[in-house]
Length: 637
Image 1 (cartoon, rainbow, N blue to C red):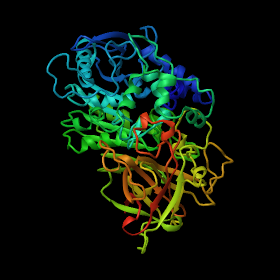
Image 2 (tube, helix red, strand yellow):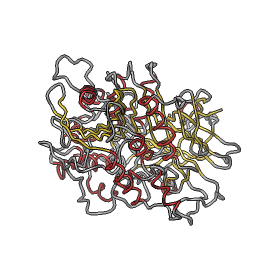
Image 3 (cartoon, helix red, strand yellow):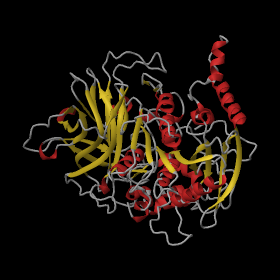
């Protein structure tokens, strides 16, 4: 994320209104950044401290305090713990935006950023998604929860002008750290807001989905994030850039099997990459790293935030919210899901993504009308903004919905059956004397691309991209409903329940749920006036499953060639209105490259596989009788 992107769309303030009074044009993006930066320098003092933890390790902390903070005018504290640097370093160098949004800086908060243990200027050893330790017996037993507790204790005692109340927030990995602040929380912590929080790096966030390895994002990210850092340093390791081509498909095809990454590039020095390669299944290493089992007795209010088009952590907010909710917390537990990519609620206006408009400035609205009022209520005792349990943006309808639970109580699970002949229906196909099926050949040497674009980094566009480029391939099965005679609204979990067979002993199955626009759809792309939207295939949800984990993510088993097997998997949640006149489509394929690594289609440890292990395989998807494949959705009645 660029610095400029982060500050876009923070709203209008009095200094901005001057331009209109004077009859001038709306200030440019650069002018707004300059205004924010000037405001911060005029109204905040910055101090830097190394805060000692209970084990003696010191964490670098950057603290912005309102200049008028005093015993007679006190402010609450908001804390962001990050592995991505609190830069700029130096008490005379200021950030150009503060807080979850500039609304916080202008409203008056003590705003604190901290390099987590082992990153940038903090001492200690970094451990990605460090496990929570529920059995601390000595000061040497630490985790992210204890580091937060010790930090809050220090801030309350050493920063004059604080009102004794603290909130935490963070996006992505900082979202994980925010979740950890709520476990065994300091009594002063009144609200925690995990935003796109990492929840489980094996099951659905960032690194793996349902056991399938997310190759290009993990390689690019870990090339910097997992690089050695022998001592505190304000500069991080630059990400890998020697691709030699703008085409990720070409680069990762030439890379070959996953073991080549260490042989050619990381040379065994990237600790986090090595841990990925050493833990192919959902073993104790992975189980220890999800906070879900520890989301009990949560004391602060929790505002979990996510985006329906998040390319990295859609799984995290949904499972974090539900993990807390399942334990019936005494404090309020909120979920906000909007039409955003990763962190999109904190930057930009949220009016559109690619060719899809959302009818309003959803990000600006969230910042001003949801996030700030909720924090103000818990930290400044302002009136309760009456946020519902689940505040959900329904794509397709482009409207916010207020639900008293998630999934909504007026939703019912229904099945979208795959029929012979490429049909899709809420009614099952008639039973046949012999099972009916559709078949395709998957060739790891010619994988289905995840996007039609030529790009070297993953980006987010594939999450809302027109899927017609894939529908035309012979190794992609397509199932399509009749034209809808009335709207169909889904809200809640989406899952795939496939009955399949293969000539190999392993396979991946990728399922996409798609909204097909009518042929006469208006050409209303907000970014490309000449874009023809007729027949546009909007990806609503896409997910992958590694079939070896169909019975257990901890104990993989091979497929038996020719045997019909049930492969059922979570596709995560959605809230979307398929409008009258549209069609619903499902696509099924076995490669999604290089978003996901290639499955050799042979039962092996894929992280140790050789080129000779990769083979073509014929896959069948069954469509009738007891072997009727379907997609489960929750339909709002």
